[in-house]
Length: 461
Image 1: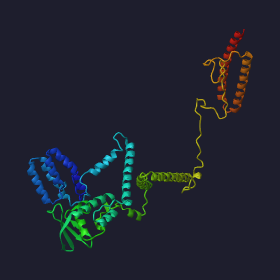
Image 2: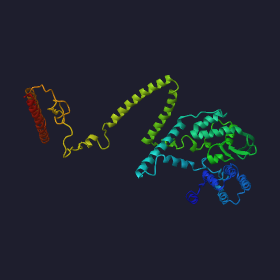
Image 3: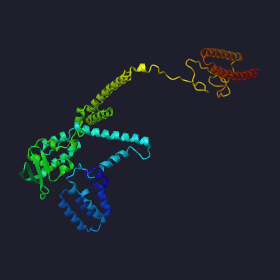
Image 4: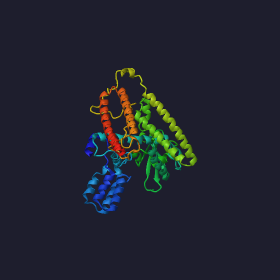
């Protein structure tokens, strides 16, 4: 990778991941005290001479001169030691945690068992959620104000909160609080610049030198923190305090740490319009932010809860009505560059519907009279005498009444059949099949009734 980086990005500085480097150190050297000293050498914010002295002292103390891994690591010190890299810009990144963090985020959505189509859909969903989280963070930075602390430099703190993004402001505030520990020793003029020398309250041996140009607001600190991270260090803030500066100079605030690092103002000047998906995500972030505030306030007391619930119900009803109206308006055909929609599609009709072959209708036609079948054994309806499980009807009925009832039932059945023939002239084939089935059922009923009548006559005789 180092060879590829040097060829593709000749002006870039290749830095080894400190997390992996420290993990390799634990694998090759088991002494915990050595690991502690090695970590101090790796992250020591000092000059090159001091680093070399610390390294030699560590090698001698733990007797690791013959360790091949230690020798190879020392040869690559320009790629991992802070003393050699502190004047290079890395945006405060020393590990591959951001890359690994993105990989971990994507693994929540994709799987090795997915096919190509599923992978593309899941990856797109992960990307949408990632961008939605980014939009929420941008909204909090642009429309929210962080809680201020009693730092003693309130004007600079308010200025930082107005220009820095939310996360960058928290880093700036740490340096703002640390500036109270800076002690000025002397100041003098050097060419067109003014030089301030200072020490820290906890470390009076290390002298820090800050160069300041009042006319252009240019500053340079010997700790090189501004070069490596792009954030003001405590020493530079102490110089601003000495100069009674109330507002952060724009020259000292990197665009990448501002609330608008993507150049939103430039987009507006170019009349660039966001996409519908971007606007939806932006609106969702705003509503969720206000929803959090509403939830927190409404839960404080029962009275506030009742008011919030009533207002939310009314608002939801209003929004539903607006949604219904908007959907109705959008469903109306609108004219476009190609003419009226109804004119363009006037020849398009519904497809011809065909009946399934080889099957009877699954339900009766509307208005068709459904015949009810009477059992000859018990006199009930809906079943036959051969399947009847009810007790027989009253045997005291005379045979004449049975014949009269039977004839009446037959007359009713004939009337019903006549009505069905008149109503279903279009379905002659189906009616013929149904009439054949009905005639067979009637014959079975007649046979059963005749057998019952013979039995009754024998009983009477």
